[in-house]
Amino acid sequence: MKKKQQHPGGGADPWPHGAPLGGAPPGLGSWKRRVSLLPFLRFSLRDYGFCMATLLVFCLGSLFYQLSGGPPRFLLDLRQYLGNSTYLDDHGPPPSKVLPFPSQVVYNRVGKCGSRTVVLLLRILSEKHGFNLVTSDIHNKTRLTKNEQMELIKNISTAEQPYLFTRHVHFLNFSRFGGDQPVYINIIRDPVNRFLSNYFFRRFGDWRGEQNHMIRTPSMRQEERYLDINECILENYPECSNPRLFYIIPYFCGQHPRCREPGEWALERAKLNVNENFLLVGILEELEDVLLLLERFLPHYFKGVLSIYKDPEHRKLGNMTVTVKKTVPSPEAVQILYQRMRYEYEFYHYVKEQFHLLKRKFGLKSHVSRPPLRPQFFIPTPLETEEPIDDEEQDDEKWLEDIYKRNQQVSLEFFLRSLKLDGSQDRKQVLGNLSSEH
Image (cartoon, rainbow, N blue to C red):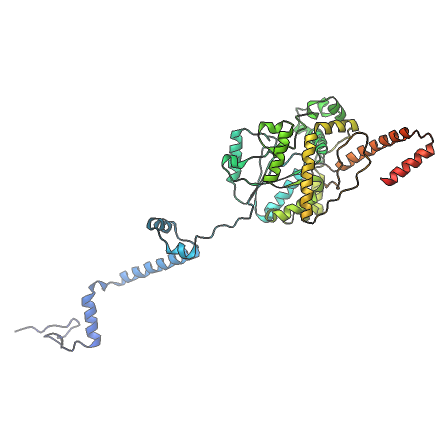
């Protein structure tokens, strides 16, 4: 006797001899076919939870992938291996940090040319605009060996961009050592004024305290500290003669040994570097115009610099760094200085002409006063604009004006003697006419 086949759910199988030709009813029959065809889909509640967790992780990973703006590293490696990538083809590379241009600026500041004023402004601007101000603890080493050049260029080039590096150092050729050549900026001033400011600053410092400055220069002997400027020049002391007077040009010529030798070679190379590597070389006597041009050329560094410079609080800080105890050298001493610094003056006037040409292109007018009566011997052109309150010199213009006034009187007396004027009234009349003309 055959046993009745039992239905999986209990009870007798409704079709003990097989399903009818028309097939099983839709509900029960289709379920039985799925179970029989895909038995591996049978899973527990724990398996179901694991699948859902995996799906959640996948979705979160996909979302992170899209928000990050680029594929993970392993996908890029896979693309290189397979030679194809639909993501990069469709979307391009991930966006990189947008840097201003130029993003590498070097200010190899010339000593006693307003550098402390500008550095103070840069500290304020770096906090305001977020660029990287890179300074150096080395202040007096301007000439470097080849290894020192390589090390310094490496340190500068690896700084976070955008950066502005500043230091007293002669021009560095980055491309010579395989680096990217940065943009250079600098400021110079009348060479005689720069020399005189440095001469007295070395001895007496500034308004921040003479005693503190003397403590910083203990090796200077008293007779050297109080050496008369005229004696230094006329007696040809090393400090007042070449090569010590050949100071500005090497900052633009570079690190070549011939750059430290006064002559045409260093002068022409300095001019070439100014034209090819310096965005701007300004004139300290026209500092406000220099700052204005820097603000236009490099707004991501110098935007708002002129308003900061004109702020009364900033002016007070500038007054504290004015060189003290300066005396006026004699006209004869000034003339000797000019002869010894003739290459410096040729370079200074060349830079000044280029700066004024740049100002005209931007619609800035140069305030050029009518030149005074020339004395018998030539003295360098006096400052043509009011000297700004800066860290170097507040009364430089007055110095040379006093020299001119003194020598104008000598020239007039010589002129009157040549006319053989004996009457004092006639002499006063001629002096009055000449004074009214000039």
